[in-house]
Image (cartoon, rainbow, N blue to C red; front, top):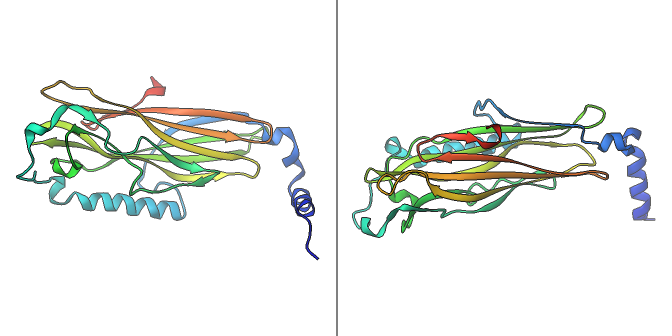
Length: 242
């Protein structure tokens, strides 16, 4: 005889620790968001291997010391070097319902000159850079109930025959995600703005990145974010730390 859904739910609830039904368990007592040392390993388990493959794949694109030959048919007059646009995504999911989302083939943004058909029409790209950030939430029992780390990866320094410094393959990916029972985590990455931080004759691509996350429990709901800023010369800033 099949058990009713109510019976299954009741059995599952009774099997959880008694403190898990208390408001103190669901309380989000403290949070710490900080940049951590990026040793290239990222998170753990399958995520670490996935990110390692991604970083290696990026390096493979930059053979010959990271430079490309501009196609002879590329019409430089068609490029508006000082008009910088995002040719990639503007919003993508990093974590959904506590599960990491990794789609490195499509989840990336760019800051490239208007009129460009593809980022590999530029040359002089530098090796990708990476920054790692970790957010940890403790409950009323001082237990880490939500602990997730995300990595920001970007390639910089591309130019059109020595003109401008641009960005490509800018992405935010999960490095590790740990969410305890009763907590839900959703994380998204948004590119609100792409600008020219240089001049019309010496364009310098700049991009803002907003990483937003929501945590929901039976008794609590919080939403927070981290604002980041990077440029085509490789510089990076945490706007929340200023």
